[in-house]
Image (cartoon, rainbow over the protein chains, first blue to last red):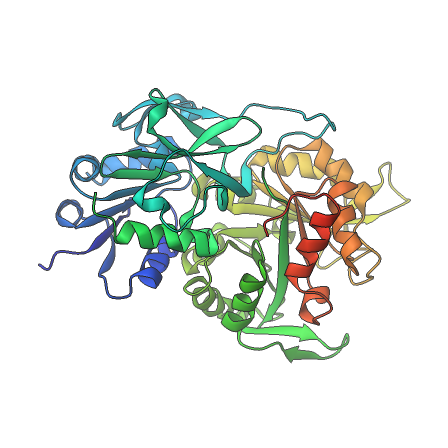
Length: 212
Length: 254
């Protein structure tokens, strides 16, 4: 079988069409496959790990398809991009359903807490919409994206890495939270690059050409 | 800082994006992908497609539009109209919708909201609430269904709280006595709902000028503003709307 260029991990939770279409858009010459085949993921040149819905369900469905070790392997061996719940699942534990994550990144996934601003407006949860992402350092995936560019978020939980130097980008809602982490060949984001117009497409383009 | 969103809304019937010339005549607005691309280029933060197809036979035709747009335009897409069961939600999401809005069905069968959010997550379920000011009830705003024709006896603010309790991740609130009037959103209604729930609120119905968008945010507490005609007929571009809102001190994505 021909090795696929980019495997988008499909564990049955929600729609991966947007992610694969956006990847095809930035890399029409590459072979992008949405798959739940552990072998294809294991052999793929690059892996994208998206996710939506509730994290405990995502972990359960991932295990039901026997994909845990293929994902784990990818996080250590090839360019790997986690998106949204695909970022959260990498962590030790989530407050959502008090569920264990994959334990590949030390830290917790926490819920935004209620907050009322000075004008008396409640903090809306989910954090939904376009927010500034401030870069903490240069990275291949930030290439041609100015620090402070807006990306589209939709989430009620955020990651809190034990080692804050993993944070590659952050946003504020209203407190600072981690919007992106980088760790060797792994990059993972809480926002949705596949829904973030030209900035998101630029990040996906950078990922497709990334040589960590 | 999180930006307030501007969402152009497009009507779809029998697989065509249309705009009303008057109440009787609907005219093709053009190629859906081109229209979506144009709004994207102007800086629209999301797009909303509202299926107004009368015949259920033709309702699946919107799926082709969503598929086409979702493969070319990479911003969030909300689709509403004619959603009756969880299976309808699944098909729209699979076609490329990011969020599905449920309106009349939420009133007739609230369990659909609970089931859909349990299955697909709150983040992709929007409950659309059509409300009108009434004087024959012990509350101010009543929920209506079927495009504002049928009263339900439900208090719009209480109804909003209940939908959020069932899992709705966002509310699209349309003031039926403002829709099409161009006199502005019903900011009192929106503020009452926005204060009662902690999910984002999209204000809809009645936009006639750019100050109305500003008022929707400042007076109505909206997190997003939806408009149709002011953008379709070229009165304003999305870009102009955002520049105006920014001048009025509102955080927008420019």
